[in-house]
Image (cartoon, rainbow, N blue to C red; front, side, top):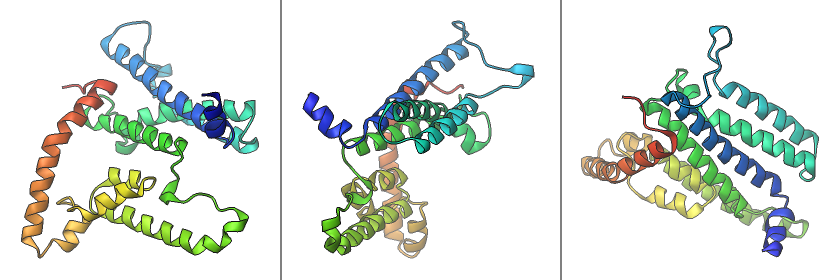
Length: 245
């Protein structure tokens, strides 16, 4: 276990990333517990409203992200400073993304159905960072060493191909698959070859004069949403709390 830890985390300099991920997830979970207690009127926690101004926790989150980011830039990838910067940055990200929906809508939608977007983006972010920790790099390309310059054309082809698959998946209305496909090219290929979502830019452009393809896309989207949307919503509500009726 110690050998694995050194070879995969310490030696490649991924310890700050691991600390940032852990602090990010822990901050999000603790924040959700506190906000749910405030919502239920339990415990000693209350909203912070100096002078009648409700200060959302995205504000200290942004401050911590700025402080942690500048400390990380000023230092190296190793040592206590790098670890402290990673923890501060992770805490800040947890606070900011917990209110991602408020930033997106520019409205207090924390306990509404739109507010579940915050939970979704937190899960997606944690999954992507975990993929990076596991050794996945964007578009499936590792860093080149000096003796690998002859393979640069192969690298360019790989990046261009994987980028193209991710863009096609995005145009087909499959944003989650496209984002994950940046790190796992097979996922982007799966999204690129399947039917587009009915309201996606791809469907509006290429299915306009293909009624059968448009009908198949609508049926498939309906079946997919009926099968998975309810489960995804239950998971989001379990983690972040059910929206107010």
